[in-house]
Length: 409
Image 1 (cartoon, rainbow, N blue to C red):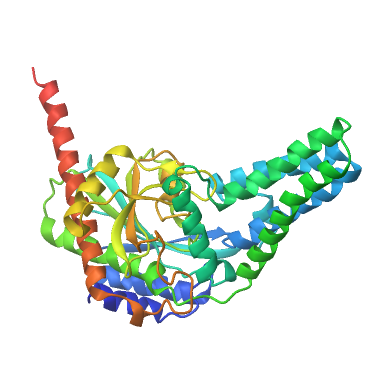
Image 2 (cartoon, rainbow, N blue to C red; image 1 turned 60 degrees about the vertical axis):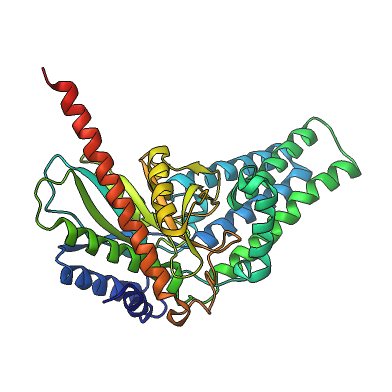
């Protein structure tokens, strides 16, 4: 089965948003697909609250409540705004917050295929992609996305801007400053106008996030059935090349995340279970593929940008140059499948496909269908993933040889 056929088949599970019955059926199909590739696949079920849009809509509403309270009681209003800032920060790192508690809980599942052929002391590398589909919404329309891309390019290609959650926190911290000013006795038209500015932003954010939470689920062909197809193709090629070699120093595991569109909940839960055993793997996240050009991510994060591992970035840049020509890497402000690993302090890198504006074409739109996928680009992306796996394996072998040489008498 080609990568394009895999993506098309995954899209046949219509409405596979996080926690849905379609997502569960997709997970079973993926586990069967992995068994046909010679991998032992397991289903890891977990409970979660995947509606991040509604969770942050609640955070915006809390910010509006703080703004209202600032007029009559600046201390309480300021404390509420500050608590909301902390809640957003905790949500970005743990997936748990005041806003999440106000959203429905559901069961989802990861599809996991561990590498059983590698040596016991092998370095473990997790290849990961989310197989659920996201919702459409006005914020994913052509105009908002183009405007965001233009602003990011204007701000030194994204070096000087936070993610969209970062801007939400800026508005809340603005209200904290207003609370301090009002509590010290400042009043009048000027402070009223200063307070209105972030309040308008919070109102717009609450409306946009709520609309997104209520929108229909997209086909999710490019984002991220294409990423899943690339991960499966690269894994199959890697296994076929290595054969039954028991001496491989790199063990390549696969984690296909459920309920992880826009927030890598699945990988976060998987890493928590592995942390008990003291494992610290490398992580390769495969983001949307199938339209645009292959590239790699320098940094990512909707709150504050987290820089991906420096050595893995160098290897990714070298691998990408042989596939798509020299590329400087993308400074993202979203959430690739590898973001949870980087937030946990693990060496991680992400690859995927973007257009010349740094956007995923048709992402979270009804037009993101299998018919719009470029089969050649999916194969090229799988080649990039395989080249990067090869480079990481060679790098691990070189490090191991260096250590062995230093230990010789």
